[in-house]
Image 1 (cartoon, one colour):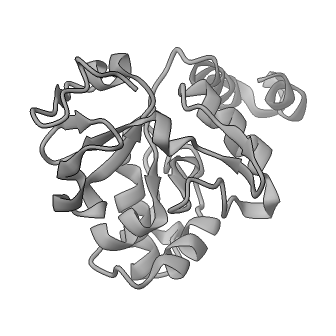
Image 2 (spheres, one colour):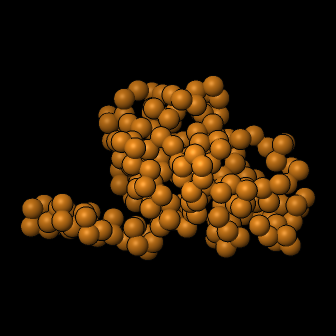
Length: 197
């Protein structure tokens, strides 16, 4: 927030800038979970990017999904790299939460301009843990619940039912409290409510 305030003074932009700074400040302090801004489709480079950005906009606050998940969600499971490129040119980061998309191995990849540390900070605001690995920063997927977005339930990461669910439906959730906030029910196979991660 301080960086934004130095870059944009209220005097330089009037009431619109003041409202923008306040809204972003609320988001970065965790008081706001979404931004209700209209997105101008003309900012998108192609129909493919539009599909990718729309699918990414559906990723819930406080969760992460993989690039493969987005590719499958738009019906193009082999287009993982193209999805990453479309997100790299996201015209409205945070509003379209490309920071919530990670590599299949949990790595924080693909953030424009190699600004992975910023991605880490935004994820921290949303309660997503990030760890240092031999390959760099990553989400500890083995210590997170797996939520099924369509079925609105959540599992342990070692649940046997995971093999039956498509990747496009998976979202990684950092805590039982977050799953409860989202209205997700515990899986009746692995019982994460009895065996927390």
